[in-house]
Length: 183
Image 1 (spheres, helix red, strand yellow):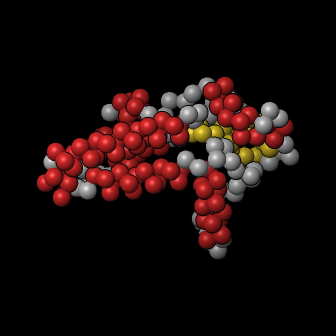
Image 2: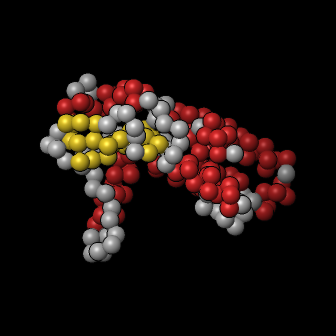
């Protein structure tokens, strides 16, 4: 099931991630496998992500870094891959780069699922009185829209950093570069 969700793309990987948290109706063996979708999606080669860096930071993007480990990502998930790097000043960092074309794929999947939800509502009105599929999809779509804009994620991280400042055992990574929508 994990491999099927992964092959279907980012939206379905996100569904698998959500299911991995639902031990109330997903068997434990399946949950363990679905948990891999949080950071162990099959990685793509770095050269797939390099055009995203160039589009977001311009052709001189390599000057932002002293080094970036392009061989093995730290993690790969539904929307992005993360690479270990050293900024130009030597500061250790992690660089999160969105998968190319992921926003368009998500938009297409959402459009198809909205249509499917309308068909289900018409074909099975009793089902929709129990489960409001359009509302459920709406919550998921809203969350995915927020996650697909890394500027919003960075703003949330900065806010989280302020909120956790007084807690000794809570940490939130600092955003080191000015984020873009995709990096």
